Length: 126
Image (cartoon, rainbow, N blue to C red; front, side, top):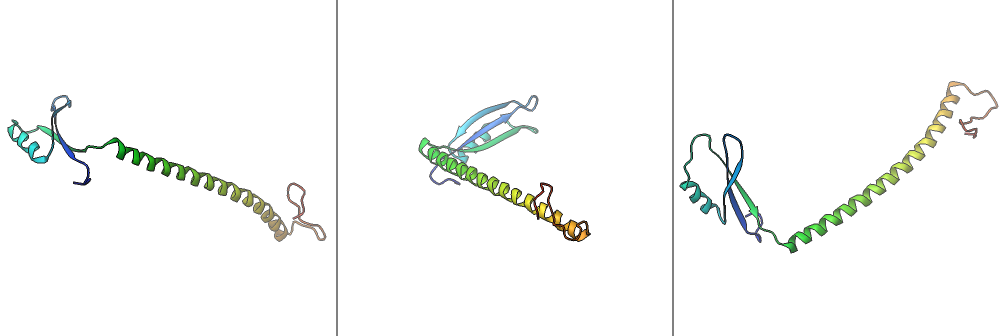
């Protein structure tokens, strides 16, 4: 059992080979009961059967999982908000750096006359 505190139930489903419709043959408390049912059936080449395992759950355990999910979602939202704020701050800082970098490039290319300062596109001295 993958969930030691939860009972497992098995379903046996027959799939129609002509139109693909599914018919549940039964729900079984263990795999042995399912196999005995299959032994009773007439099976032929092309017959398709599906065996599925389900775990019975109660409201208390589902409520605990729901609470964990909500906490995880809130943490994710908070982390995303912080990431967006850091990204916005970085973009603002990057824009200022770009303006300084353009002035430095002008100076290196010799586009600034002797005695003149470097100015950005807003008229501020760099």
